[in-house]
Every structure is written in structure tokens, then in C-alpha cells.
Length: 256
Image (cartoon, rainbow, N blue to C red):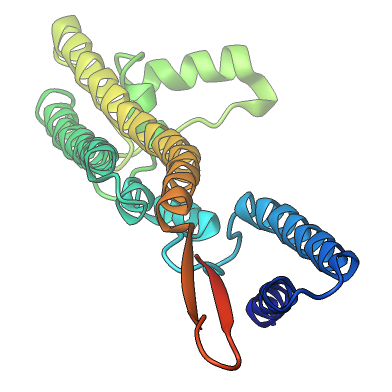
């Protein structure tokens, strides 16, 4: 519609000039053409700064900010790759892979240490490992025997005390202070390893957030650059100036 109206106005102006028609009419047509062109230039400027929001990519060749954010949320670096920044995407992907490798590494090492300290307790304190809760192994690190634990529990905790039954199932007695100290060291190292695995998960979440923000900025930069590349105005002059009915048509086409 815009193209048709512009061509019509140009044709009428040319016809009036070539046939010597009233210049007042010609000036009026030129004024209307300028107003028409100014209006659409303003509209084009507004459209130029519109960025696609949801998955719908409203202008050909532009990227969706929301899609990039969701991709980076699922897999850090994927949003950057979608936006065309492969180098930045590889950085976030490498960081994510390293963090998950660290998570499984710390979990595995903590599990090995857990087996070691339980085996050490069985060998040096006579512990029956079957069916024991975690707090039982915590108590092994601070008390030489089951009887010592029950004595201090009843003395200091009183009604909150939870003494172990006096049978072989709950019995333990360290063969030396060094054995108990080594057990406590193994157990602390195991706990620290599991704690570091949790840190890796936290860092992975941070990596996702940073990647989401970076992907959104990368898409906006890409869209601004792409808009300048594909926003072009093409002028095409057509007509037959000779003959009984001379006319010239100017086509103005803007592509997005």
C-alpha cells in the first residue's frame, strides 16, 4: 500500500510538470509526498528499535532474546551459540563441564573416604557396620568406647540422652588414641569432599545465571548489527518519457 501511494504521487507530480499543469497543484502534491515520506520514516525508526521478545522472530534474520535466555538456562553457552557467538558459548560450556566433573569427582572421593573410615572403625574399634545411622559414626570420632559415650550422655544430656544398648551390635572400643584420631581425620576429609561437591552445584547455578544475562546481551548486539545490514532502501526508476502519454515512475522499496 505504501509503495503504491508513493508511486502514484510521483507519477502525478511528473505528469503535471511535463504537461504544464497548475504549479499550485504540483506544489500540493509535492507537500503531500514529503509528509507521506516523513511519516513512514518516523514509523521505520520506531520499528528499527523493536527487538523480538518471545519465540516469534518477527523480523527475518533476527534472534529471540527469550529463546537465547532459555537455552542458556538449560545449558550454559547454548544461548551464546544461538546468537552466533561460538567462542563465548564454548567458554560457558567448558566451565559447565568442569563444574560437573568436579562435582562427580568430589562425590566419588568422598565415597572412597567414607568406605575407608568405616573399614578402619571395623578393624580398630570392633564396630559392626550393619544398620548403623550416621550419628553413630559421628560418636565414634569423639569417644573411646560405647560405655564412655553412654556415661557422658547420661551425665550431660540427661533426659535428652540417647544411650546405646549394651550389646555387641552397638559396641565399640578403640585400640589406641592414634586409631581414633586417624578415623576422625578420614571422616572429616570425607565430609569436606561432599561439601565441595555441593559448592560445585552452587557454582553451576551461578554459571547459568551469568550465561543467561550474557546470552541476552549477545542477542541484542546481534540484532542491532543485523538490522543495519538488512535494512536497505532501493530506488528504481521506471517509465516511458517519450510518446503521447509520457510517464516516469519511481519505486522506493525498503527491505527488512
